[in-house]
Structures are given as structure tokens and as C-alpha cells.
Amino acid sequence: MSMLTPPGMGGKYRVTGTAYPRMSRKRSRRRIVLGVLGSVLALALVGYGALQLIDVFQGDGPKRNTAAGAKDCPTKSPEAAAKQGAPAAASAASAPARPAVVLPQPGTITVNVYNATPRAGLAKAVGDELAKRGFVIGSVGNAPADFDKKVPGTGILLGSPATDKAVYAVLGTQLPGTTQQTDARETADVDLILGDAFKELSTKEDADKALALLANPVPAPAKNC
Image (cartoon, rainbow, N blue to C red; front, side, top):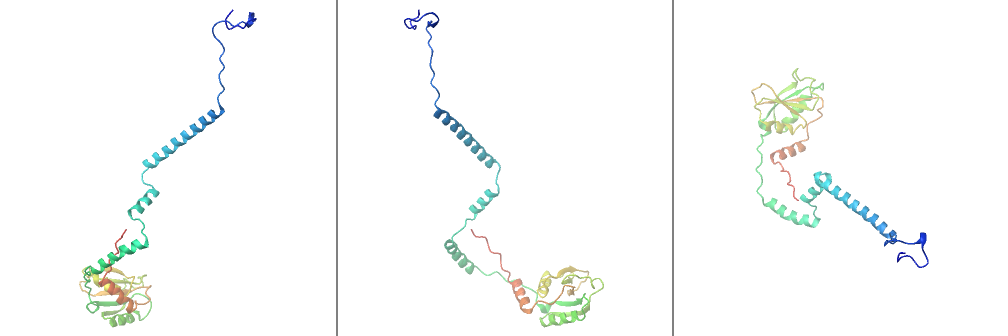
């Protein structure tokens, strides 16, 4: 009889050998819940890290470019802009004035006025007005056959290949929207061919303002951050 057999018991109830039954503790329900939560948290961290790596290797996106632009030129408060604007304005005021562009005077430009529209007397009326503004008027009449009833726009300025571009610019201030062409002539005169879209010349005030702007062009403002 084994020492583990209680007194009075034997037979099939006898415990033999040196082994004895071990009772295992039930797992705590709390430990199981904590383990599951830990696994979920670990998976979330891994997924977040993967998204960060994808964002890094994808390069610059729209949001990244926007942020970079904001960093390159940050928004300033009105007070800071005013402080910066004061020295800039003083510097601009003290800077030497740009030399004026030398333009040909209207009295040095000979204009031939031709009417390519069905409106009678249009060339003479325009020629008379240009003469009042100082231009030298040459021939006046109907447009040549190559242009008669074939100019849908406002008008055409037609000169020689050697005609100075400034001549076209000065004459263009009187009639905006004209196009420029050249022919085989060797003279310095310029044809003004009036098209179907012509209504009237620019007012003398507007033409004078456009001439002044040509002579003293305003530089484009620099970008200040």
C-alpha cells in the first residue's frame, strides 16, 4: 500500500506510485481581455507606421506642396507687412528713375487710310481725325482688292519689313486690336486698313494715356515674402 492511500482504503481505490493529481488554476478572464486588447493595439501601431512609410516614399503631394509654399512665403500680419512696406517704398522712391523710351512722334509717321468695309466715307473720317492728332495722312480711299471686304477684325497695320515696331505701337494706340502685316514696299509709310469690326478710334484722352504708358512702362512688382 502506498503512503498516499488513506487508511481503510484499498483495492481499486488504492493510490499507487509516487504521482499525484495536479489541479491547474483557471485562467483569469481579466488576463484574457488584456491580452486581446494588447494585440489590437499592436496591430494598430504597425498599421500606422506602414501608412507613415507610404506617405514618405510617395513624394510631394498636393498637401505637401501647399505646406512648402506656405513655408517659402509665410503669411504676415498687417503690422509686419506695413513695417516691411515702409522701407521698400522708401527704397523705390530713392531709386533712380528708369529712362523713358524714345517713341516716334505722330508727325513723323505717314498713314494711308483705307476702307475695307461697305460703310461709305469711313476712310476720310478716320483720316481727318488722325490728322487732328498730329499724324501725316497720305492716301485715303477704298482698300485694295486683296483686302476689300476681307478684314473681319478691327483693322490691319501694313508696312515694310524694315518698319520700326515702335511705329506700329504708336499708331496702335489710336486703334486697339489691330494686327500687323508686311508687304514688299520699301517706303516708310504705313497703311491703316479698316475692317468690319471697326467702330471708332480711341478717344484722344485714352490714346494719350496709352502713349504715356509706352514711353514710361511700369515694371512688374517684385514678389515680397
